[in-house]
Image (cartoon, rainbow, N blue to C red):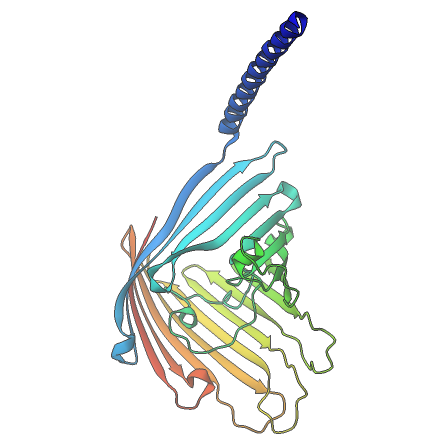
Length: 364
């Protein structure tokens, strides 16, 4: 009994020493890891814009108002031991009702001469539908007013998650990319909510190319298609696909742009004569921008959208938009005036609207 008691005491004593040794080792390891991470930790930066606007649409009081919009972009970046770089971006922007969303996120891995890999949610679009636009303030068919022009789809659209590969810069300033996404809500695709395992979801492939063969000239193009989870159905007549191409040329103070985009919607049933099924949309735009001096810029932009029917004699009306814009730099801020005249909004004859925007923008 005495021997057993002594053995038991020594065993407990040894266990206590071992436990203290383990705790000391663990604390030292954590401290070393903390020091290592503090040395290799990335940098965090914040950038964004704050903008005050006054918007008037066709003199309708309900569509007039003063507002403030803002976007904050939080970016962290660093470098890995193999020389690759990484960056993380999260945008905080307002949504309807005054709530803030941070669902626009991306992780970018720079692999030096091997190109770049991106994983994005509601970000990283490669759509070239506006690559031709040289407007002084903004793309007027991309404002709060919806004129109902149908554009090609985008792998980086809101609510989708994509994985992308971008080449390094090739000869003539050429870059290419390929992107793949699933049509899941952005947060669901990240695994943060239920529903991400649903099989009834489409996917999208997107390819883009940008090249600069001569000084001042930029040529852009992109194509994307939807892979329907119900491919092979006997009732499917057409799957969704679309794309765009554009040219923009700058010489001195003048910038010229021209582009076209196409969107073919999915047709899920047989098309008969006399139906109103839409086969595809065709959009055309051209833009002229002129920098009068270092402070003042002006532009004129025209855009049209044509709706083409599969089999129908129904009369069609093209949406037309003409925009004149001015932008004046005040150093830390930019004062802008933009006016757009729309005809046949929603492809409806004589549905005409005028939109005027006054904006003061601060960038930081």
